[in-house]
Length: 76
Image (cartoon, rainbow, N blue to C red):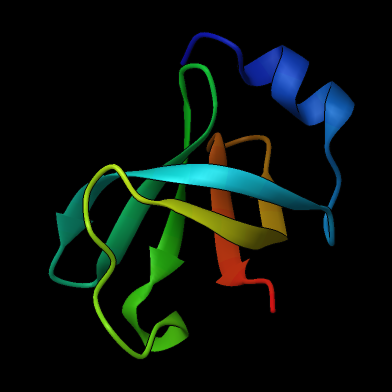
């Protein structure tokens, strides 16, 4: 993933940021949290399915540097 080192150096667990929905999958939605970096918003985190292209305010639940994965939650 391009941008991963920059993302992990600039963000930490608990950070709130704006992210764009790029893909809807059966278990949730992938959001672009930084150029080239996508995070997962699990479907249990929304009351209605977001639309591709929508910008959501999310909170970082976890950053797995080894697997280059970001878990997200809705930030209210």
